Image (cartoon, rainbow, N blue to C red; front, side, top):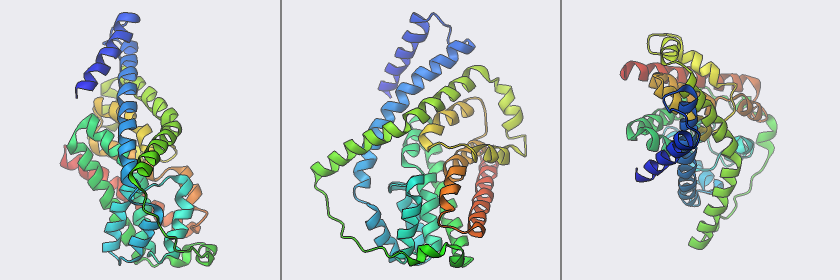
Length: 321
């Protein structure tokens, strides 16, 4: 894209002309990566979040619950996984969304398809991946995330685990709120407000992610990552998942790290597994979900997700080797 060339020239000006560093050196390469990716990712984020906010204005949580409450198993799982891509979800909203879905009559398995898809298949990350790596990697991310959400929701639904939801969830009555249709000026106002809020929330994660990515780009030897996390290491995928679980970041914050890891030769399946673990299996997310799930269901959920994500990593390492 032409605007990316401008970012490249700005990075050259700062790193080469002003600081006098060689971009082929470790420090120069790390700083060049940091400047270039910071400019590129924040511009992409601002444009993408605004566009996504306009799309999200058509799918408020009340409307999403209403749609899913009419769908049966399988069809509902597919609809929930797709709606999860374009509807608001974050760790802080996990509990109220879960309660609202259950009380609206949405089956438990369908609810989990939504709760898995929404953080895992992040629409901002999807378009960032498209901008950084092209449509094939973005489509791979979208397809695998939707499949994980679909099949994991089906498995949880078949296990009939409604008794493993905390009792108070079934006792809360959620009213069927009327959803007012906003005008276009209201949609644009919401999009501007939402873009500002999201950028204020994620900027630090993004900068930290770019900093880590810059360090990997400049200081981590290529043969190191290929040796320990390349396709020849049969344990690379589960190790990547285990590494991603304790991390707390959104998909936008982990994209710069993914960018650097792939540039250093890490396998695409291993990188996807790492990214999915960070966004869908983070420890803080599990702590919040514990408020509505009994330990048995939470362990089953984590186990299904872990096995599925590892399977996705191995599958794509095999197919794309």
